[in-house]
Image 1 (tube, chains in turn blue, red):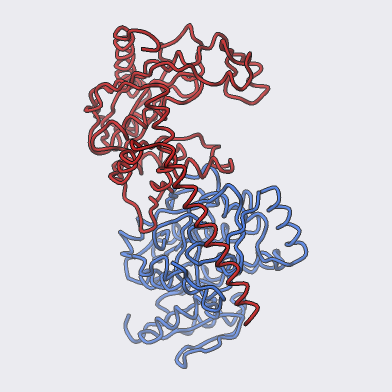
Image 2 (spheres, rainbow over the protein chains, first blue to last red):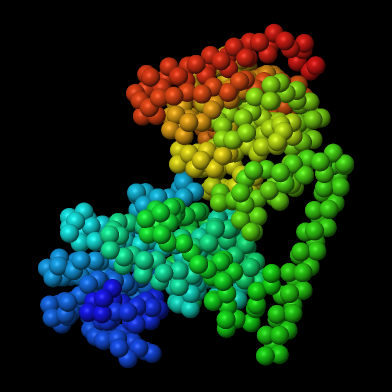
Length: 315
Length: 305
C-alpha cells in the first residue's frame, strides 16, 4: 500500500473493526463508517458516525480515492427487531456494492461467517467453500447472514473488475460479545448430554490477520478461515477449567426456550444445533491462496475470554 | 471475593474427585482383561493416524478412548468368534479401501475385520468405516462412534480420510447384504458403485475381503418386511431364536469367523465415467470376493471349528 491509499471500513466500531483499524492505520489512511461512536479511536482515523444507507456515505466514496473497502457492518443480534435488521443489512450491503461498482473501487473484502453452512447431522466433517449454505433451514435469524453472503457472492461473479473477497471464519473467540464467546464465558457451561461435536474456534487477531492478507493485490474469491486444530466441545470447556453441565436434550431445549422468552439468555434456541452437530470447514484454500496460517494456539485463543473470570487455565 | 473463593474450591474439589473416580474405574476396567490387553493397547500407540496435541484426529478419533473399548472387542474376537485370519500380509501400508461381504443380521463383521487389522496385522492399522447419516443425531452413540474413528458416510469424508492414508472399510452391499435370508447365504447382492469412483479418484488400492462364518451366526429364515416397516427397522429377521427368545434371541451363535484378505486390486480410469464402465470394474471386485467366499467355504471344516 502506498501512502495515498485510503481504506474504508464499515462497522469500524465493532471489536474486529477496531483491531483492523489499529493494524492498518500506520500504513494507510483509514476511513470508518459506523452508526456507533468509535471509542479509543487512533487520531489519524477519520470516523464518520453515520448509517451506511445515508447519502453522506456515498459522498465519502465520491470525494475520496479509496483503494479498498472492508465491509464488516453486518448486525447479527437475534434478539433485536429482525425486520429492521434485515433491511439494514441487505439494503446497506447493496448500497456498498453499488458504490464499489460506481466509484471503481478495486478491492472489496466482506467478513461473513462459517456458521452459514449450518450445523447438521448429515454434514461432512469439513465443508469447503462450494458447500450449500444450509443454516437458514433450521435457524431463521441467521438468514440475514446467508442472504448478504449470497449478495456479495453474486457481485463477485458479475463484476470481475473488482477483486471481491469473502471470508468465512469459524467461531470467533475474543474480547467481544458474540454467541461463542458469551457461551464460553458462562461460569458453568451447559452442553447436551450424549453429544460432543468437534468444534473449530479462531482468535480474533487471526481473523484480523486473514483480513489483512485479503488486501494483497490479486487475491479474490471465497475463503473459509480456520483457527487451531479442532477438538471436541468438552475439551474446550476442560481447557478453560470450567464445570460442564450436561443436560439431556428434552430438558435443555425447553429450558432454553423458556429462558429466551424471559430474556434471560442471549443464546437463541435454534442455535442448539451448533453444540449438537458439527459445522466445520476446510481452510485449505485460504492456506494455499491467501497464505493464511493461524498464529494462535488453542490455549492462546481461549485465554482471552477468561481474563475477568474467577477460573484460570488448569492444564 | 470470599464467596467466589469458596465456590471455586468446591468446584475444584468436585472436578478432582471426578478425575480420580474416572481414573479408578479405568484401572479396574482394564484389569478385567488381563495381560494380553496391555499388548493390544500398545498397538493403539503405534497407529499412523496423526493426532493433535490433545490426542484427537480432525474427525474426532481419540485412541485413548479406543483403549477402553478395544479390550472388550478383542475378547469377542479371540474367544467368542475365535476368528481365523488368512492373507493379512496383503494389507498395504498406506491408504486402502477394504471391500467386504456384509452378513449376519447384526453388523459384527465390521468390528471383527477392524479387530483383525488392529490385532493381527503388522504394523497395526485402525479401521475407519462409513456410518449411516442418521447416527450423528443419536445421543451417546454419535460420540461413541466418533471417538472410535468411525465417520459419517459422505464421499467427501471418505476421500479426505483416504488422502490422510487411512484404511477404510466399505460394505458395498449395504443393508441388503446384512439382512438377506439364510437360503441365499454367501451369495453376494449387487454392489454400490461409489467406492470404485473414490478408488479411481484417489488411486487407492482395493483389498477384497471375504468373511466366512458370519452368515450362520443368526440364520434368518424369513425377513418380515411389513413388520420391519411398521417398527421402522431396516429388517425384521425371524431366526431359530428370534423373536422366540425375545432380546436374548439376538445373541449370535458362537460360530467361528474366517476372514480372508485377498491381494490388492489397483484400478485405473476416469472416476466420472458412466455407470456401465464403473459397473464393469465393480464386477471384478464382486466376482473376486464371491470366488474367495466359495474357496473359504470349501476349506471350512465345520461351523464351529
